[in-house]
Image (cartoon, rainbow, N blue to C red):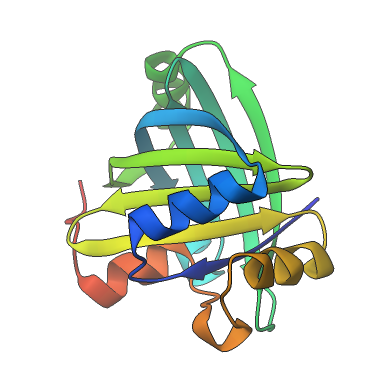
Length: 173
């Protein structure tokens, strides 16, 4: 399945929350996210522009593979994700089979949903707070951008790793 999304950087958080409320979006999460990325010792995933990540979202643990980002104004990339029952044990499995943890980048997230669209407000200093809009089609993402009063030229297709690189915010672990 493909992940289809855009980011809107340096948002006015209160303004975005007010607009989401007016549209009827429902808050579905508000808490800490604990993502850790993994790679082989030879960094072959990074070289292939792929990602393997484990992420703790509240009480949930997600294991995710992301393929290379497609060339598009939107961020479109293959995403395969499953839930596991234990964050630490999943990390142990990955290290036992030869993966190395590379980046740990905790952040605060507020998530909202409206129909098939998810809105994520991420606070991840020193990166300025940003909004991520994700849906199952490009048309839904573009429509959601417009519903919030933004234009597509205000959006970014950067990945989280690219944002971190741009801000040089997190050391490797």
